[in-house]
Length: 457
Image (cartoon, rainbow, N blue to C red; front, side, top):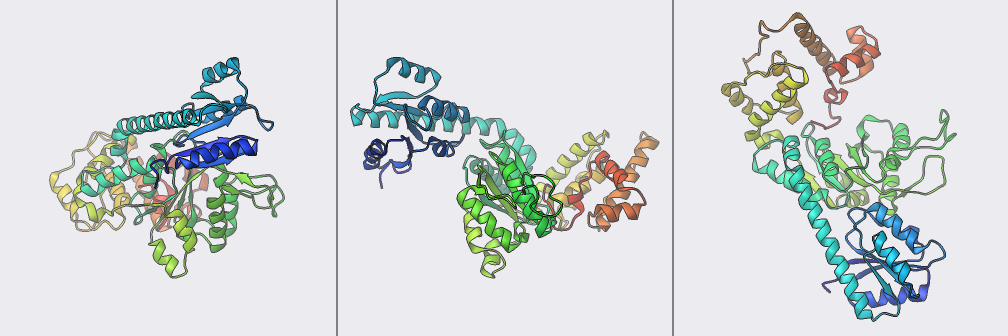
């Protein structure tokens, strides 16, 4: 295999004979070459993570080469674009270089000179991407340690995997028990990637009916079905340029799995009730509580969709697998909660931390975080076998005591009603709107009380 086989070169020229000649020259040197007559199709391949080189004809009927150059550099100003022309035009060459073109070559130039230009451009692109990755790691090191907290070997390995995979523009699967933090990992994959400035869109497949999920994912045109009064942009389209996180993907109905597979293969979609193919540039991160390969083998999940998503995989350890992190995590969440609820941070006794390490924690990090929040506001931990409590001190005023009691009351009701807002509001005897306001006040998330739903803990 040629040492150039991993180097991608895109050739844009509306003259087939010239385009094929350039491609043949490059292919003989082992390059991976893609040719395009239509510049717009080539532009769609460009992204912040594009690692190759682009050769573009200057004069084309479909779109002027300078216009193509501007469109590409608007996506990433450091993508190397070599302008190519059969007409010697010094003024145009200077203009292209000033706009940001890497080089300007004549089609009559010696092929060796053309190949040397491609090789230099590729090396420069690799240096740019390596510097970006290093900068991301340096800048993001503290941030990811604050998001994926712990010092165990398993969590260190997880942080390293996330930072590495964040730079690779591939779809992937996150596997972990409920409460381990699958959405946190998905958000890290997005925030530390070249897509960070684009949308991060999350959808819980297990929380929606099939009819609703189809519209949520793909959107719909006005009049597509009864009640569709106007066009709606779906999550896939809204995430264009960014990351779509599909939690509990094992709950996705088979018919929608087929449609999602098509989107992943063709990077285009049709809204419900529409005929137009809409191009989308997205990275799909799927999460599951179960082994999807095992589910595929049983016929409970599409095998082809599994393999299309499983380009890479991230396994999140359970809290039971990294018990040495429990004390650090608990103190971290206590500090967070004290700041959130404007409370004085209470010291956590070493004996309590030791007892916490002995607990099974079936709810994983989310359950531990909820316990830390209760400790921070002075409520009983409500953990079997633990005698510790954090009684409210005399410095706590009546408003704080009432707030703590109200927060505890709402949390208990939400847990009893499995996070269902309507039933919780009825159980508490208050309107839905008032419940939402109280939940917002105490930063209570519905998903934290739904068994098997969400994973942002």
